[in-house]
Image (cartoon, rainbow over all chains, first blue to last red; front, side):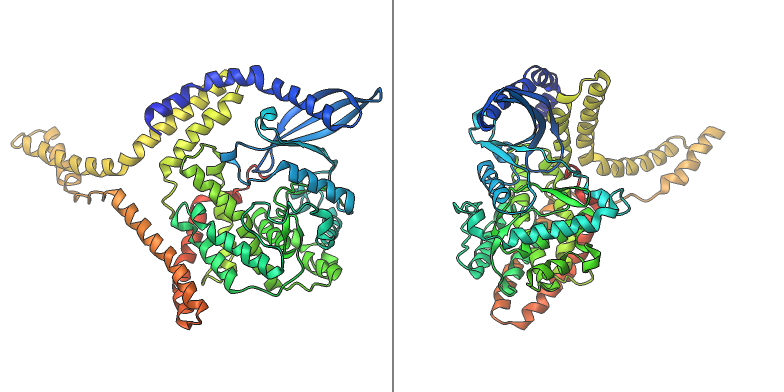
Length: 377
Length: 168
């Protein structure tokens, strides 16, 4: 970007502030009104209230609002969340809001796993600018950091994590056909994943990682990922049944209240896979977030022990290490690719520069698991 | 150290983000002006960074020469002022010239080439390992031994708080 362009960026700000105040919020409000009228059965009148953007999560633009709805002449208030895709080039994960909606509803209707109701998706990008979906806003705290390190809810940690583990087991042991009836989660990125057997799943996923390497290598510093993918291919563990995998099971993706999980959230990266992926990714994110999900419930010897007790799968720490790397690959491929697109200036989203920091911060754990000499955390 | 994105790319990203993500949401006039001043300062840093170190070295060497030249010009002048200038020339003016800062781009290019050479070696070693060649494991360990401390330094020098801002 030349100096003239920079100067332009610096002075055009006055124009942008006017357009935001004049139109942005109002248009969104009106479009939401139309969508909620369509999604809520029997609704005859809808007013959108308290519409505000909320932070949290890197991959979607999220807003909270209340829909005041008249159904059969009676006023009801529905607390809701709008999850909207970012522009295509800026997307960290290229996933479908319709698929996410259908999965959440399948989980809600076929399992005991706590999830919020998904009202529906608007896939017509002309309505909100990009595809979007509306979810019921669940009760419960999302401040999961309060469960650890002396936080005000630390006394709930064992109970919450016990319920979280039971929910994860319920997800991983539910018949895939109930949660993936149309097959959309068999290869949601459309990259050639073959779920006809455990071996074909692992092999085709690693082939996808390796094939995508030149889309993510923004600098030779990324070679640790190449090392990781090749090592995963050389050292496959024992097979296990394939399951519906949450795909971003991490300490920020659940809500809780009085010792119970009230909702598992953010299902956009779900796919058919090895259930150990979720455990591995939680292990990674536990380290990065300085949380301690995997240490609970303490009376059961921690999350993995309790999970093994419930499933009888006897997952070993070594297998967990493998799937910590495997799960890291699942997120690293789209995230590092997004960074590379930003560095190549396919778009100018700031987030994609910032995420170099979390992307790099995952590397020490990777090189520890790959047994790089002299590395300890 | 990764050389891509360049420091200049990151600074440019800050300017664009202030324009796109911050200023449209700022309604306080003072905060608005401050944000624009930040853009201006960041642009100043972008302009200064490429020439800063070379400029300081060059000026260091020029100033020692200036002190010596002034003393020579005042040869024969017997006043306390001239004595003080000669004194400066005899002390600070004798500082040895600093080596000129090498041109950065060739260093960065070579660093990048070497990085790609290591990167490609991972693939070659994998072929050897899968063929059962035990020496490939030794070679892999040599590369990992080099890279491990580099990655730790990379993270320590660039990452704050695990990079979890905005994650919820």
